[in-house]
Image 1 (cartoon, rainbow, N blue to C red):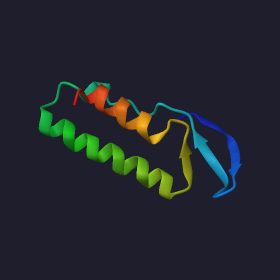
Image 2 (image 1 turned 90 degrees about the vertical axis):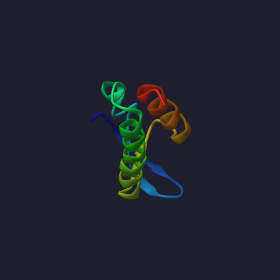
Image 3 (image 1 turned 120 degrees about the horizontal axis):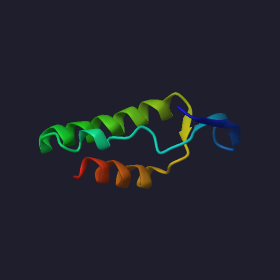
Length: 74
């Protein structure tokens, strides 16, 4: 996991920024569609858990959703 140097935001104070895109879901594109949708939900939950711990993703949320959908082919 690549991390950018710690930065500060007005809303959150010091934050750690994780360089993205990370992780990749391309390896799962051949799973059945239902399983890919489950992984999509898991990807969103995992990102939220990281953000709840104070980590900030360099990749914006909309870009993250587009990328995960493209990688899972959903």
